Length: 230
Image (tube, rainbow, N blue to C red; front, side, top):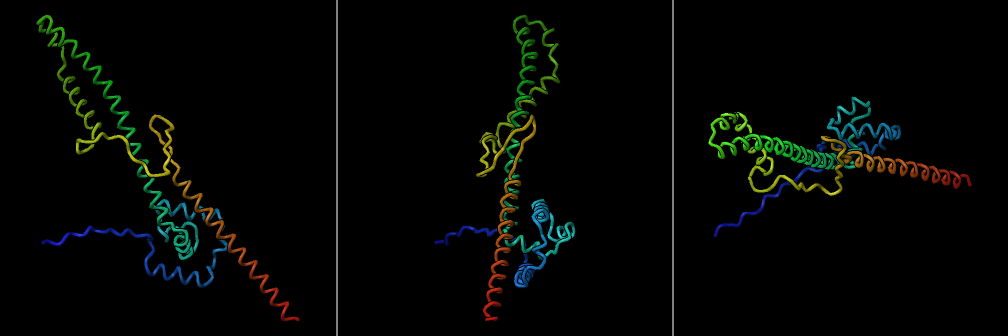
């Protein structure tokens, strides 16, 4: 008996940081995260925005003049890599939805166009069949007939996928993706804003926690000094 083939398991990466990068991040954290206190929320917003737009850590560091290791630390702590993948996935879904809408609008236009050609060509055919008058057949423009047939073919291709089986409608969008039509050929999407809002809240929470720890340490140090004086 032949051995049953095991399914291939594809392990997708969860970070874009190399082992050397991670070692630098760990060393940075152990050194007390120098420079982090000077990074305000506005600059953090810009750093993360550049990352989500596809800039490398080195490029971001040069643009905003922030240490590259600090940026990698934030990326690792707040899981920016997976955030960017989710953001790109949502954009891809939105683009596919826009393509479907464009196909539907194009098909509607072609249907109207073929209907007009059909009436014009069909009218002459009907008159010829009724009268056997060759003039009606001669009035039929063969170029229009060719265009009509090509339009019909395009309509059929727009209606079905490449396999010719399933209609090209009904895209299953990811959970939480909102599509809002704002014009004839425009669609508004907001996944990035939502992503950045959540991440900014995480950063603000981290800064508050750091400040709380500093105050607690200062109080403990003050108490220690007081006990020594006694």
